[in-house]
Image (cartoon, rainbow, N blue to C red):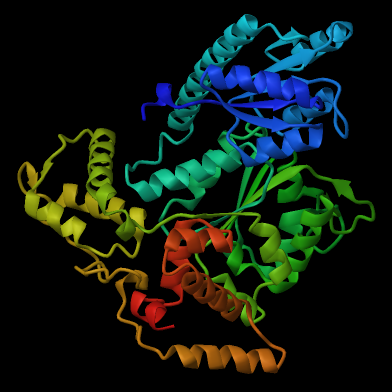
Length: 482
């Protein structure tokens, strides 16, 4: 059915059953679907559970009043055209509601013709606002993610997820292989956030020595240790009112992790050699290429810190899962390099494109960029006919549901897995990896192999479920036999 022919849902929230019945009859004759609520709490519950297009809201209701409902809508950013239904003596309150975002008000008894006109106009204005908001979102997305190139569904999903979380203050954990563009996404999330005017402080955790980590992260005062010739402001304090990006956080020393956890919990830091604590206001984005489940199981990473970091997980897929973007990226890198070096851009032959598409790209986008640059320099004539690929980038057929196209044994007996889990649980030592694996198996079987439903049952996205299945070598054959 075309969108303009879909019947709209109107929620009538009024404590009078007579009013609900009368207005309900009018709305049905006007070809609207009718939902009802007899108090403010029912009204809020109905908005949360249903697709509501217009709200007819009485001011005087039990449990929560109409004003309470409007306040809840403001607090939760619920954009819903609302028409106030009020008695004559409540006109001043109705005007207050309009200042709070209500569209218009009607006095009791409700005039049927005016109700029809208000509903039509409210829906038209709401539709126009929605179109404007979508255009604004599209323009913002193009502006913020202009340096992220790709049209594949997996990249679009990553961008959509980043757009959803960027205006919040949730901690974001970006997971992906080296060279996939994790820092680009972190920068984009900061650029689109309410902290965009604040600093964006980047730290490579793998490059910080254990001896200097505390000083670099939290700062020190002059004379606090040998060589401390002046005060130093740590990275967390530098990121005040902005964003701190901890890249490769999976490589952070276990002792420093405890102190980072405390900063995340308290939002306070103490410089080395200083007694007082300083409040800091920052948003944390972190990234890693490591498998946290193994790191936690082997006590290399704190589970409590992991759950703080992963308030919102974002997975950046490797280049081999973005086959449709490879040529697009290759052409972009080629033009970029030739423009910077005043070189006439060569063509890429069909055979050379085939080589690009059938390669594994263990170094991902960074490796592709280097390969293109070398090919431009080494070419003969006006065409790139072949690529000198580094070791490990050879042709490969990536089998579905197997990690990195590897030939790891997918036939490991499922009972062995379950026995492992049972033994560890009996010893009182179940690890995150095994608990997660069992949860996936149970959800997959309960949903009859439907990945979308299984992901919903687990409370994760479908792409995250697929990634986890690859991580645990769960082929379709294993899942069917489980």
